[in-house]
Length: 485
Image (cartoon, rainbow, N blue to C red; front, side, top):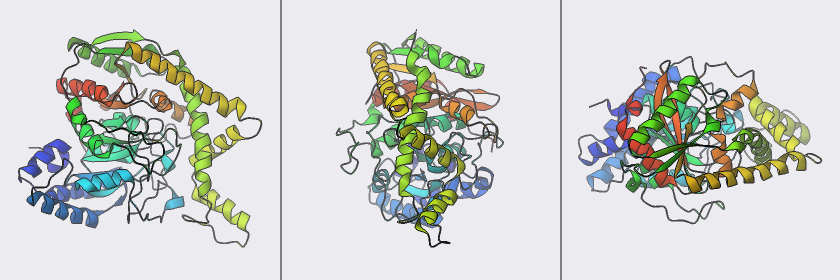
């Protein structure tokens, strides 16, 4: 048997149900793993050791009474942009360095109701703005496969923690790829659900029409288990879809016979590392041998997605972040009697460089004389991109693409070139613009670093996404590799 910290959620659940291990033993193993590797990775902003052991003891009492859910006693990490009652929630920013929420996000409520164990809050790019977790006010996270490389972002801490065995699953948030891109770079599985399927209540907002919470796990089966726990309507979130989700584990069928899979040629063009293209196309051929029908297709508006995203997302962030003014909560500059100077200095010292860059981009795009030329036009192109996907899903059940154009790049390699950094999300952003479900799964290695493949489907098509990804993982072992940390 592998070390307890290297178990999948479903493996650990089986051992807990059979009473072969206790939740306390499992949690202690994970906490010991955190103590050993966290100085190398910096995947956590806050480790909640005492709380975790208390919750593990409570889980063992539940199990002893025969009350065990799929996530009871399972150690988890929550990205620090999702609020947790009584536990510091910083969003990776000095602005919220001492912010302790008085309530749980809906997703945290639902996980705690199952008896999951919180071992800590994940490091991240400040306010989820970044592709490398180098924008965190609490220092960068390092990739478990190569400590000189980034883990991706903005949920880099969560991806690194799952990859390195510092938790059995994590929750991230995905605005332009922030669950899937770090999952790909760290060799784990990451799912972005359909926009509105998972409640955003308690998610510290970046871009409200794009943000979505999703699970990060070792394999597809674990993703389905976590999605079962967190999906569903929430009246506290006005964008929550009023649907009753199915049992997603029923989609874990090892069968893709008859499914029509598309390979959009625009995702295999300039800027895609050759090894990444080869790995994804090899994965597509494997699915073809398993009975799927694979055809090349075209999504020509994909080329505009990056530009659309970097108008809409900064515009929404410039509105959402006006609340951080030093008056109600968070960091407040006090060394002045002038209200306007206090507000200016609060934002000057409380926000990092990337956050300020995006606030300025968004404020410019929304300003008088530029709103129609930029923001309104971007929203129109967004509609066209969504329609293009709708047309594609009349022909195909799912689409296959690379998750990231390259494997993990070196720390500091792109920090001086924001445009190069933004291009790291070029394969993931269209999905957020259209509100689609999409999963990233490991599909190979290049230079010892993981490669990820995306499977995307029409809105509320999570079952198709999970079925394709599960079938692929049953036929391969890329997801079973563990970093030599």
